[in-house]
Image (tube, rainbow, N blue to C red; front, side):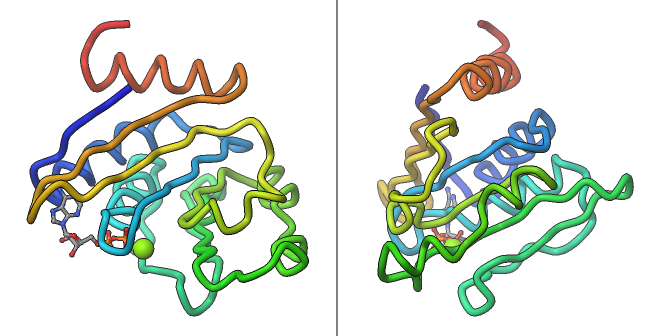
Length: 157
Ligand SMILES: Nc1ncnc2c1ncn2[C@@H]1O[C@H](COP(=O)(O)OP(=O)(O)O)[C@@H](O)[C@H]1O
Ligand SMILES: [Mg+2]
């Protein structure tokens, strides 16, 4: 599924729609160059999820955690600084996925430890304020998440 965004707010609103549909155990991978809009998208996801915490780029701390009032949380991992497979193995993704949902920036850097079930989002810079977002699902849960998301965005299945 493909969407276009003409502003940071529009990208955030797409994230809100996805975040509202996500459940603990869901993994969303955000691939795209620096400035593509990954963190902007996560701001929407966290707010759609119901968290009031502010979203910042976790580049220096690796993982941020955003709580919802019912205490379910979203983990926000930025794998930019991970340089090797052994380093990636130190991340306990399974633990995060049993406690909440997980959103990953630079997922291609930790490909060796990524679960096969995930929703993959490819964000591309088109020009100035224009981004192209491509969504693809792997696994039954991700496919149903994507179907609900498509319905939420386009109003059709
Ligand atoms: N349509 C758009 N969607 C997302 N960000 C946009 C868009 N247009 C311009 N921008 C700008 O691009 C930058 C994206 O930054 P960020 O979300 O931190 O990207 P990343 O996490 O991929 O490095 C922000 O400065 C944002 O304001
Ligand atoms: Mg970022």
